[in-house]
Amino acid sequence: MPNPLPPVGPQRTLVLAQLSNSVGDGAYYVTSALYFAHVVGLAPARVGLGLTVAWAVGSLVGVPLGRIADRRGPRGTAVLLALATGVAVASFLVVRDFALFLAAACLYATAQSGLAAARQALLAALVAKEERTGALAHLQSTLNAGLAVGAALGGIALSAGTTAAYLTVFAVDAASFLLCACVLLRLPVLAAVPGNHRTKLMVLRDRPYAVLTLLNTVLLLRMPLLSVGLPLWITERTAAPEWLVSALFVLNTAAVTVFQVRTARSVNGIPTAARALRRSGALMVLTCAVFAVSAVNLPWAAVTALIGGSVFLVAAEMLHSAGSWHLSFELAPAGRIGEYQGFFGTGVTVARTLGPFLLAALLVGWGTAGWLLLGAVVLAASYALGPAARWAARTRPEPAAAGVAAAAGVPGV
Image (cartoon, rainbow, N blue to C red):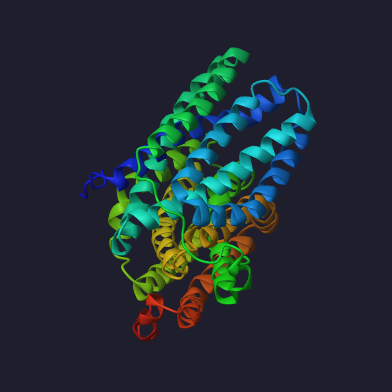
């Protein structure tokens, strides 16, 4: 069993910062919808509209904020954005109309998107290149552990069902980002990247990296699959009990917490990253096929199929995470990590925004055919990522190009 803690130093400090705010986020995720409806008094449709607009804004602003992290120094930028996120969450405590809610939601999404990019730039500057994928695995494990703890706290608030309980959850989330900023201040000050600061955003003209980001977005449809697609499928198309939705979420979170670091050890270059992504796509085909056969009238058979599919799903998720992390860093030019990570991170926003609509139409509307189509599309994207990565590597001015020859000869799944 790998050490659950990263080495002492910057890696462990980054993990502590991740833990500090992921606990608050876990509580926020499970209570926010009911809070905005019951405490703020907004109609669910307006909440959905506001959050969609906010994340769309956040995805657009994430790239220039990442560039600012490159130019002004990632530590200071990350600290400011953590504080801004805390302010946004705290403002939810007092907003009581749609206009203010939308403004606070846009600030929250913008600060979160920028903070993610700035953290990646911090990691790139403080962690040796060969250790980055492992460090990201530790961060992902910590994220899942924190979310699980936060979700449990949020569940207590939901059980209480009082305004005070909801307000306490949001206050804890706001405080968690303040704590995150304080932890980030323990990291060493990093100088701004030298160079021409008037240069326009390079990533917007980097076609290979854009293709890589687009293909990765297709694989990211696994995110709303767990939170939206499966719950709808279980309740609408299977005889499985509704409580299984929560059980499968716990299974996924626990597995990532325990096994993500070990899985990431197999990825140490462009060839192994491409291979991990192909294996992820193949596992997603199995996932979709097993979920498709869960539409039976026998509860025990449905539960068995759904648990089996969830095991395949979490294995695919961990391989995808490890492979995509490596490619996103390896193919980003030195000095523009924040900018490029901000762009790569837009895939998460797009998947979370459009994914629920696509998955609802495919899975609930088309049934078994929808599952098979989803698996085929993800498999195609996973296999296309290898050639896209080699194309991108050939256009890099430095290190990444070294892996092209080896990547071309990597055996299949």
